[in-house]
Image (cartoon, rainbow, N blue to C red; front, top):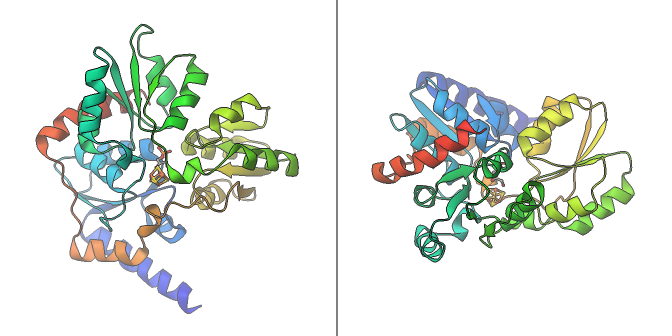
Length: 312
Ligand code: 13P
Ligand code: SF4
């Protein structure tokens, strides 16, 4: 009871501060439920980028990880962008630096670089296109067949893209520890144990491209944004979800009355969970922590991000 009261009071405080300071609160699908519930908009990277580009608010408080807040800053350079905890990083984004990318490009002259949005602004500045799980296939298909493509940093997303597009990609061997941990055996077990359920699988998962090998009509490899649309429209009642478990809260709200379960209860991103309601309140109250991107880097990264939004 007391905890619920505290949560409600904090949420009211957050809403009051956001209104007073003309700030919009954007929250990623993997945020804790109480942060999702207080946000103006909850979504995946692509949806949040679109909101960041379109908002009229003076400031954006980004409840997600650092590269997402950087992307918001690049898209809205005149606005103040805050993140409630500067340590909210991403192990996938950390798997390649701009220097490593420059070396890789030097070994593949003439290749185009497609970077997943989970990268630093410096890496985006070295890229031709950015993509998210929601539009990666469309981005690859928009590139002429004869061009070599360097795809980074997620190898599982890259392998899945090779399968769905039929293109050969040169893939950086990075991975997200959360999604890489969801293995083909987890899916096989659920397929046997829950024959009535639809399986919704994020393409970053360690099982994604293998899932295609034993795919059936009820296994769907789709982005979190598409999972929400799918669950809303489906006539089915039960869904097993292979991605970070935060999405379950969003799915339950968007498709009430249906049953959602995590394929792996271990799929928890500790970086996403660093943002709490208290830290969000402090961020608005003390106007911290401001996210900045060097203008020269931002300008070069912007081209790749704009191409991603255009192909959404
Ligand atoms: P989305 O692009 O699906 O929002 O994913 C970002 C992310 O961090 C995946 O783990
Ligand atoms: Fe990065 Fe993985 Fe966390 Fe997403 S779930 S923010 S890719 S570490």
